[in-house]
Image (tube, rainbow over all chains, first blue to last red; front, side):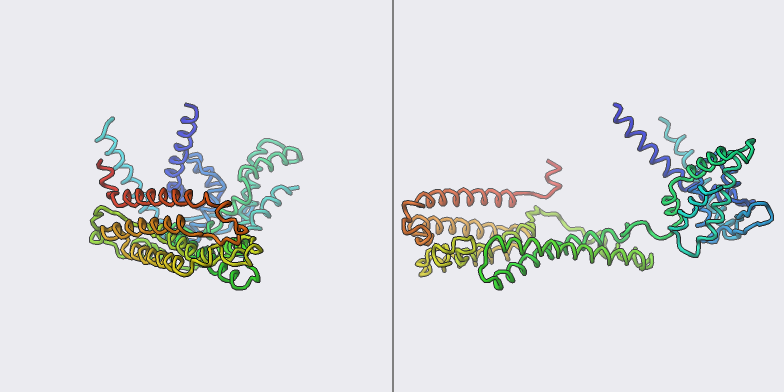
Length: 118
Length: 333
């Protein structure tokens, strides 16, 4: 029984990870509507209840920058140099599309849940 | 002072492309510094132990530098991706057995023709040793080619490659009636052909090949007197079996004529071998100091019994294969 339970936990963890993986991009884009640097982004996401690991977020920010969805700028005015990320026009457009997709998925799933009660 | 942070950042960027290093290093350093500050909080920043502990905790939160570097990499972290994998497997499945077969045959021929005195042990060594090397090289070349394709082919071409290799322009029209399948597996036929080649070689293999050449001046194991008629007939049988296997290979399915021919040929061959064994001295008498009957008389009846057992078993398997309906019928039953 313990073995089955263990396996169930691993399966659940795998599915949860899959489910969350795609939402990190949307969350990062949403949080970058205001210019923010990496560490502040982590705090904002965490405060919003979205647990994103630092070692996931930093490489992701860089990838989004390379894809032209975020624009980065070094701010050296403060005591510590910081890389601020902002949504580009393309990023804003794509964030809207992704958000639309998210909302529609949410609606579809809710409808499915209601139609097919246990 | 901040040596842990410096060491950590250095170990991350060491694994990254040159041009991205300064930017990432700067950002990671700032982040780690922020994390340390947060951990120190109310603490006085001058307490070395507390700083050290905070640094430790910060780098441990970011985790293994190698893994972080992997996250930063855009290059694929695998040799062959899912688009090319089917083609990779398909090619390997065809190529590797072919390489093994060609290498085994080529090495056997080269060994037999170049060794001053061919013997089974040396031949096995030549075949196995060289074939293993050939297989390793073939595997390496195929993998390297696909890994290169994975990296340099445009995504569109990769997707295209998967389609053409695994399905072609497949449509529902390509479905065919899985009539009583009676499929003859190609592997089985090829195995049979290999055994037939060995069977054809039996009368001419010199006794020195099995290290007993001194007994009959490296003559054949078979009684040389049989060349007058029995051995040519034997070779004719082997030739006929080769033709039947070729027929099976081309037809690909059991048909009534193939079934009938193969049963008749098998039984005729068993009769022929029984007659040869029971009426002739099959083995070269010189191998037994002329005491043929005293030493090996028991072989003939045992061999005849074995031949008929094998023939009966073979017919049973053939019949079963012929009777086997397709998969759907089986599941329906």
